[in-house]
Length: 305
View 1: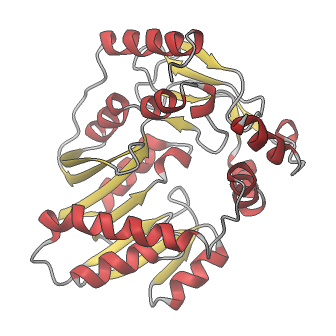
View 2 (view 1 turned 90 degrees about the vertical axis):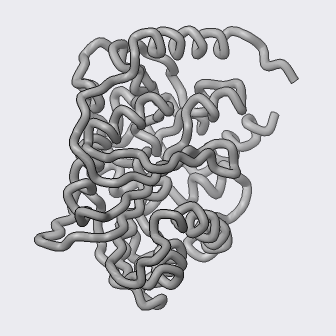
């Protein structure tokens, strides 16, 4: 009933997902494989959006998916109204700051062991929204902060906090010779179109002693919580990561995990990483088979409450 009501509110927006520009996905972003297993045919909003898993490594992704231009328009015009309708409350640049403040405090505590003793350096927050998180980390550890985000309204609020701002995405960002002691990718990697490329690019932006923090929605946690694979899939997440796939992607990008964090929401999993040498690793074939079998089990077994 709750999901039905949420989808009804979404439908009232009148956004036509079929009218968007779409592109084919020819290969897996993690391993390059071309053998896919279709998992779902609609997402949590009720949109006719399909997802698939790579049969070789288990990465889950939308197939097909909106183009870069379609996503740019979506985030500019539709994303905030969509999530507001789905949750039945206003979610905008101002309202998210309360949640971001709580998130920032938690992240500052997580980063304490690796940032303690630092009193200078630079921070880049990719998809940093209004700058709440960047401001908190910078003030705690004496860093100068830059926020990269595609939303002008949110960047304006970040600038009011004294942060440098850059309009754009990780794909469009041209850093030149700039390097950063801290790079944050908070709840953003699920939204990019080239996740492996984004991590490799951010790895190249780190100083030798730099750290990168990234967190993602744990796809298994999401579908087990709601006992719905469709409910864990959404048009705004081109990728759905499991612990196995995100950890393989980090290793292949040359990012060594120093700390791993199961978030207090029991949904996200975060990683504090240092720069290292790329490791050619992928999830085991047995874990991929187990994932696919579990998905079928969830899809065909009533939730036990």
